[in-house]
Image (tube, rainbow, N blue to C red; front, side, top):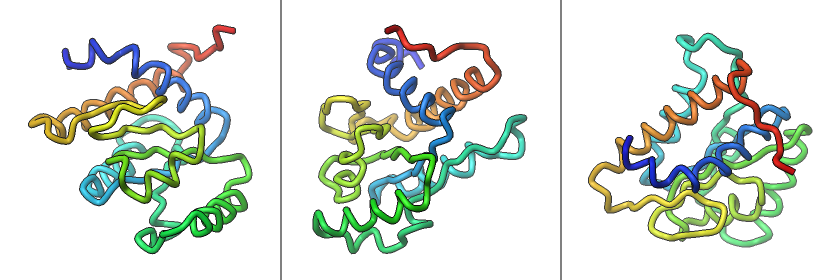
Length: 166
């Protein structure tokens, strides 16, 4: 993961913010563009694998709650979905989006300031940049998930603290 060394300053604040929300009891709603649908399924299978010796974590797929994501077209459609999610997750929720910025699902994730965004081919504020043309992209995605998973363990088992620097 030597490629990650130069991106660690981009990664740490984003991952830390997501982990704080997870520890606060928020649900993490995984959303991907169509090309990364396989990775969304991999996240959900991996994060709560029985092999992990930790509590189950509230990671869910948006398609579980709204299988008609491809029908989203307007701002009003997104607002209706957000209302349903707010009623469903009283402790709050955050989006974990993996994909290109021009996908309608990105518009949903971008509306939530707390989203954990892995965005392809566009540098955006408060997101982790990846190139969809990278020959090693799939390997990097899996490596990033492993890093996130190890970070979750470190926080859950008090190996690191997520105290604010304020």
